[in-house]
Image 1 (cartoon, one colour):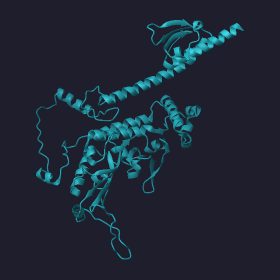
Image 2 (cartoon, one colour; image 1 turned 90 degrees about the vertical axis):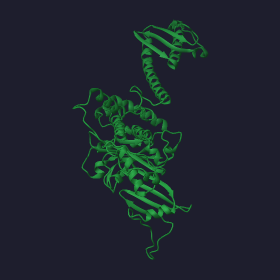
Image 3 (cartoon, one colour; image 1 turned 180 degrees about the vertical axis):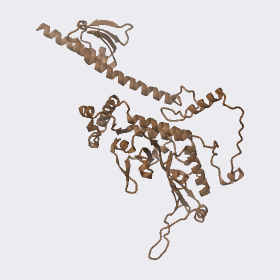
Image 4 (cartoon, helix red, strand yellow; image 1 turned 30 degrees about the horizontal axis):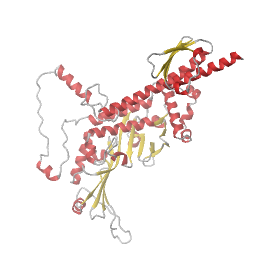
Length: 478
């Protein structure tokens, strides 16, 4: 869930003085060692349960209040952040922070944001970390915490992806606790109003839909990395030359287009040789775990209110209403069980394109809007076309081999013709380029092998046949 955060806001001198006089914080400031004089215009800092509160004098006459650190540790009173941190706990942590600072935090501006999930894996976390090869156009670097190697990280222009052994970092002895984390070092991707996030202030993190998109982004970043699956048979890997894909130097020597082609080829081999496909399994685990963290309700069933100002909060009660229950029957009726089951199933669904919550839509819905549905349809159509192109290219090679010894009968369909025209190879005459462009489909059979070519493959096939007939005629004349 959302863990590391850096937020800031301009505050008045009165608010800064109230924080400095508070008994909750122990502020420190730089001073001259020889004279003991406190240095002016220097930031004043205080540590509190995993958070750092900083006050810096601003040119406007006020102070810049910056709060950074781990909200997870802050919620656990400065303890561990190795357990699960649910969305309702994140909201309660913000309410605690607001109570501590005595100012609303919903309008604080976000400067840095870090979020991730803890996964209980089948193998040890170290084995998954060793399989990390490349991310985008950069190699993974070692991640050290207190001079102790725990995993790997890769920093791009705006984000940093971290994959490490959380059990080793927390020294709790759990070797199968894998932590996958994404940190936004710069906020331009999140604050883009036309982007998929549109997150700039703390109030935006109170939207369940926007938090759901963050989990989608984490899963997509994991799916983009080069992950060498350890489930591949070593003999098959040596035969196919897969060891070069495990080398970081191999990927660094490629340019962008070459890297894309090599990645496509590598994914096809992995899909064929590795039925488990560990990388896709982890991707599904990330989405499932994120849905659980976001949609899990408070253990006592109470609802969290939105943020209020000090004056408005004083007018309202500071305790929950008493909840009374009574037993009407020894068991829950069957129709009530079905309703509850439907509610449970409906909360864990997100849009397959943008990641928005679609629990309120019908079960068959896979997207949240017409725009996302069109995007998903376009992607599916593109995949079908690519698959068809590959199948027709392989089939064309087989048919061209059969043409040398077997007769060929085909039908050609052109633009503007109501019916297909059946012709034989010996009757195909040279066609002008302008006429050949009108060909849209070619069907036929050769040596008992049926085939069908469309678009560019149909035009290319006719061109090869015409060229072959021309050469055969020249040979007969000689």
